[in-house]
Length: 597
Image (tube, rainbow, N blue to C red):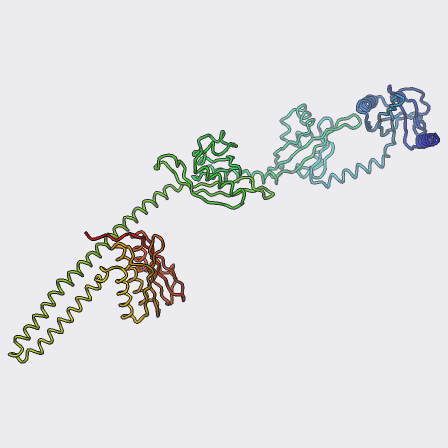
């Protein structure tokens, strides 16, 4: 009980000693209690409405504040109101009112507070500081009266409008901002009431430079008079950047829209966001219907679309670009199919997250057709070369056989005839011995030349198989070049056709010729072994080696070896490096030799 009495005494002392005027009003607005500060202002009051002490023009404002305080149960600021003092004059006072409710007593009141306003000097200083601050802002500020005429503007506004302050003061807003002159006063007031920013294009009155400003209007009331503050923000640089971006976007869009490449944008879950006309032409649906839907709805559902979906997901997950060749219309006729080289590039947002995948598809159908035609032409040339080589080998075989059989027999018969003449007539003709010996030597040399020619055309040992032919070739190579040459085999006689055996022999012959001419080697190894369904033939030397890429275009011998291997369904690969020797590796498919009929 003592604590409650002490609390009430403390509150009463605070009420009595408060420097601002405090009053307690009933729900009708009648002043029931006042503290000494308020009593000093208005004197004795009795239970009368407080509005009796307010200026008639301020009573509606106060009543409206009471109603808001009662309805919202908040502290409502009334602004500056004029209060009639006991000295007979009105004084401006900052006024506020709040709702006070006592739940236990059921009695409601209003608490009103009056605070003396600043002095004239303080107001002047505040106005000066405000004007000084506005002059140093980069945005223009125009203060309009209720007639929409300029009654104040800062330095930034004069710079933006390009006219002096003295000329602009008193002008209407439509004269200062020419585009607003198209609106009536009522339309301007409605525009200002909305407080939405308005973008205007202005022309500098001196040099005619075009520039853009954003104008935002804020209406307010002071001393029951309406005003509007117009804030001008220079948007010229932003507009220039926006125009540049728009111009670049139009150029980019024109480039994308008119390119022959199909360009599209896909989400990581394979939905179509954008397609240029080239890509839209490949869709089954118009872009308006396809946008945002699964790409399968636009392109169909087939193996190529499945590959495309997998690639898009992989790019979205890895963040790496990919390239793949896809076929449009793969389910249709071959002559209607189109080949596209598709590049997929991830697109990231400002934070680096992948938001979409850009697809660039170039039609390479004509390139593939040209490649097929070129491949067919190359195959025809290769077939012709193979037939020519086969014909040459057959001619060599026949010529070698004819030389060996026919010319050899004739020379042997001639030698035997000369020998018979020597036996029959040698005793009768003493000088015949020397002539016969000369003829005999000439016949022997001619027989040896015939055998050499026949062997060079086609070694007879080649008819016995590839192994005997390679043994003879390596033996001849050792004798003529003094280079150590070894033949190693890892299987029985290879099951090769006559053409394959001849080709393998010619490859080894050409490789050993290159060893003798260019390698400077002291040793060479010829190796033949069977690996699954192919025979692998290696010719290796320990010579100086070379760079194969530097001589591929001008070495007919190397090219000839490669063509020989390709013509029989295999290949010839050359491994070499300067200072590390050379290996010629030929792979030949296994083809059983044809039996003679």
